[in-house]
Image (cartoon, rainbow, N blue to C red; front, side, top):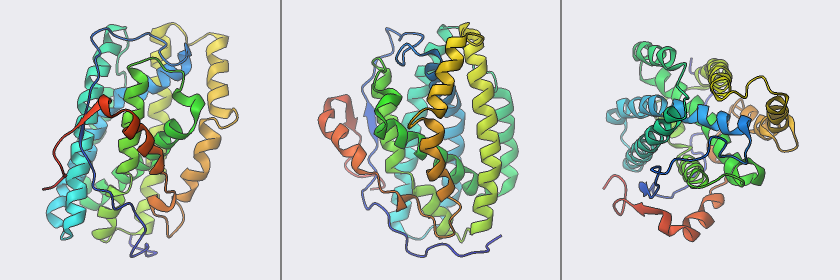
Length: 287
């Protein structure tokens, strides 16, 4: 499925990926509707958090399997940085999810997701990279919205605002790594877009089912207010759908590269102004 050739030398950030330890304390818990007292947005974000420990371990395993096949030292360092950042995300979201469990919420679709990940072992390196790349595209879009659209998380309580901003910064920093690995191993256009369509179906279904389950357990599912909150966030001005659609469709361009949309500047100000919020681990990743 090589098909149309990708750009041989796509533009990208030359920033060395930095692994960070986020200073965050969940011991006091957080409100049930921590995002602007909005049940829908809170449970949508919670649904995503439930998926991260399993999903990010799958992403780590996918790029780790490709690491011995790479020859470019910078790219290998990027992979190690990606693994380091995703590992810290996985750990933090495990703590976050324990708080959600204490609130009576659960990862309803976990057995189905775990089964899919187990069966993915038979797909081979390139296909698992293509699946991971598609999920990373969704994550990068979501992260871009968190960082650039004030109404998405600006009314979140702490420590949740800190967590989601930090997570979005690092997802932005490493948004091209899996794509670059896929390219380096000769991955082509048709495999890339075919797996995106597959992941689009799964991601949409998983998000719908898990968010619905969270709202049901929260006692908010059948309230008109919740429906209005959802419609406003998805379809309102600069809402999720209208913000995401152009970035999603860009993936279908034969010459697509994640840094075509260079939003790295969104990360700099927060990192500079909130240096007390994290600790950098090591001077360089991969050294």
